[in-house]
Image (cartoon, rainbow, N blue to C red; front, side):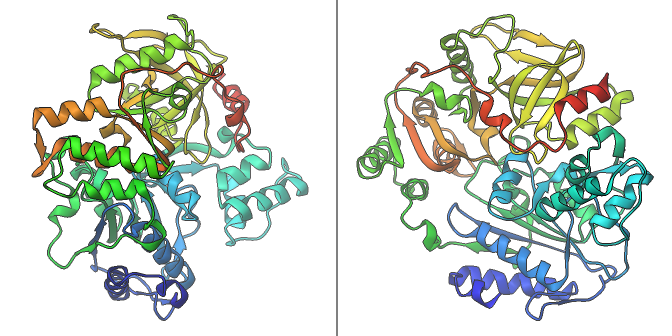
Length: 511
């Protein structure tokens, strides 16, 4: 930890020390590298807030490594093994699949909040394999599996730390070893939550029931959840329990995208002045693009970010039109956004299965084609650890100036989807893409309306969130125009991804 601490800015070091004190009081000493059993009745919530580039993720990653080095076990949600009285656990959580995948790409073993709330029930025969993989049991002897199959499972687990993935690598289907899902009844221990600005009060209460020790990492400049009246959960934390990071970390000091995002904090900055800053940044650095049109090729993987719903619908229909999409079907490669699960209570098991596999509200999905059963779709869930899903689907494509959406593909009930070529900035929170296109005329309209949120002009909050979704390049689109595609929609790049549980296996199980 000392080598890591040397890279800290002063406010990061101060936050690290405060969190270390909190963990030490809970029985986890990351300074000395030792743990003691959890103490009954001891609970604490602490928030770490800071704008983009202030080093929240670096601090979260360093704390994760320090706790793991001290002997705290990381819980992924897929298997937890036998309980021990002296066992200390840690879960790193994010509200969405995409946000969790951003952390995993940075070496942090994150999972979704929903994936921790609901846990799989394993077939007793295969629990033996899970215990062995986790280092808590002897190598099992199972008639259906050869030694080479078990070796494949162990090799997969050592690289990926996923029990379902390892069992699939051994040749098993999900329906072989997962018999159902249940809401977690026993509490865990320590929870680190990224993108906490997206949490609503209900989610916060759920997390407090599970984790007596909770660390929230969030950006106060983002948009609050729609039903929170402009407030965020860490706004309610008492003085001393909220740590603020101010300094832009040196790795991000020369990032023109972050420079633009932080310039929005100037109360005297107007929209026209800000656009001038964007144009000047584009002249200096190709990481900022002053775009005269929307690039349709980018829309298939990273949606255009808009404020107005009418703009979103127009862009979606323009995207489908230039690709020659028929009105009565979807093309392979069309992007979708999960809008929830429409299933009656008697299908609760199936609902939990779909949600645990990544089909939660706001999940970004790519359509791969129709399933084997009527009404089913083959889908790739962006950012999910096991991305391929076959699910009964209700796809809604909204039309300009029409109240009812057009439904080119539908089951009677199942996962519901909106088209994903464009999304509102609110729905984009928690996600990041390599290239992000921001539809500037919408932000100009917000500026003209003069609306405010939490004491700040709404257009500035919208611009901040939209800009900080860009990992590498920001496209500031200033005209209501759409470029022609350079080729047809594709899915071959998705098929190259590792798939622990094949679609074919899922469809056989559903048949």
